[in-house]
Image (cartoon, rainbow, N blue to C red; front, side, top):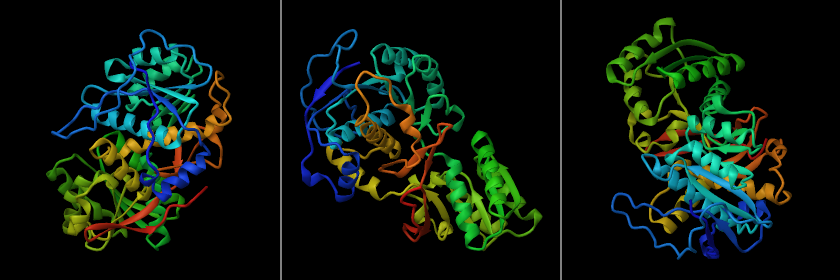
Length: 399
């Protein structure tokens, strides 16, 4: 663990107009911040900008501090998930710089070296809020330490099964994207739905969400077929799709790579005209727009406009592209800075402010937390076109 004080700020020219609006929303005008950082490990021969010299590391417990809120960041900074973890850590540092938050001290703890030990250290150091962890099993382990201490968790996981009881999920919940695209399709006159879903927990949840969403929208699910992630299994599943009659739309509840493989088989074996629907997993796939069989398909996801500006700024600072979910790290800091305006240093985090019905705004648009700890997000519907995605139904600007 290293504690680093850093007074660097970005020039005004780097801050895009839309990002400036978010900064204005936080209402913070201070000039310095304190952040816990780790060194960046270059990948693929990329060069990383040389960081400013840091003060000597602080050994043992953190010093007494009566002027800053102590926030812990728990992410993997070594091991197989180090790239994702470092991208999240970089995003939190950027957010601290952009907001110029002077009353927050953030310290990083490496979950790859032992999540239980990291959580215990974070609590012992007096942190009043934990950002992270990333993996759902790490969330459970962290909650077992943080919950008895009264320290809430803002996790980057999207596993709804670990939410609740002081654990709040920033991750994008797949079921919400299914609900959104089903409702949009139903509004366009589609009433009979089918689905291809992978075997496993994700597929089970996708099936349950589809059944409920279609029923609530007044439609009918005529077929749900499961598959393993191989060509033979997908081909067999698509042949079974029309066994209960024709359908207007088919949900392909898997990532973009699998969608590209499955779409031609749907056209060949099941329906040449049914609208293909997808989930927010498609949002990170660059291959979809180049696949002729995917043209005209719809999927729902968070809006990408602000993220694109952030990604450009990130590349300029760190010399590489960010991981898509690093926006969760940025937004976790924006939320914390907003709450910190009325949060007295040294007192417990005001958890009741997390469930404000008005919600929060970040790179991924507006969001709010339900009482069960799951985040609700405003999603847009996009259409796959020749070489690009087009927004056909914008995300709501509020709740």
